[in-house]
Length: 426
View (cartoon, rainbow, N blue to C red):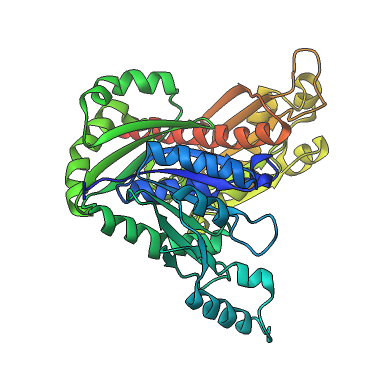
């Protein structure tokens, strides 16, 4: 075989096609295939219509070595995947006796006895000559149907807890063996914050254009930009050796904007830095309603640095619990630089923290006033030593979007403060 394989992915189901159900399967399949060194050419969605699915499969088999589908293998009348696959590869459907036995055993484990119903028997009707992919977590077996020219259609259930182990334990090993794939793709992701995608692009453009293996790619999302390094290699050790010099060059070009790698989160990196510095931390929140504190306490070990948080939504609470002077609220309003700074200072003092963050703003959809639109947010930082910083943000999106982006903006403010503090010391 060639040592490479290309596939297209098809998510089957009218509810997916119409947007009633989010297709998470295709993303999971694509990532797993890429990691195994299998090229993904395209992803599609098609409804529960046998003729359209057959046409989709025939077209995909002209472009790629194979097609991988999820969904449409259940016992109901709208599960038409097998009929379409059999037609596309030119074979009949036949009853697979081992699958009948597996379905009977599975149903017995559920406490069902007696003969199989016709619809359950239909789940064991598979394309003639196919490779069966057993399903220990459900009743619908998966399968790989191979066309006369060697191109294949692989079908898996749409239920993620059934599909994921079948993909990892059965289908990917079959593709790797069949196509003699020796190299896999290994990745390392550098997470950045506070750097725009356009600025980051100028910093790494020449490196991006010069690399072939490893390659690099950027992914922007919610105020953060990830730089992914992808190496095709025989094993993790060889990939790490190829990735290391590229990572070193990226760190040199990007600088302190990198907050973590792979699974590390911004809040996790902040807890690590604060703990290492022996610093304590607190929060004072208005519009974020506790989500800033929640982000921190999700991190294991946060108790080593996090003192606590005060959700001061009402102005009276800002005054009584955080010590915000009533004149500040009267003269500048709750959504103002002055109030945000007073909240941060109050959290430091009342909670005995070395550094504190505060958030206040207008999340919407109502609440706007002249000069203070929906999405106006102030995030502030104060330290017990008297240092302060404040940032004015104008954030787009829904109420949830504004609150989520405010939380990120506050965490970014703290990250930048720690960067400056470390730079001063060094």
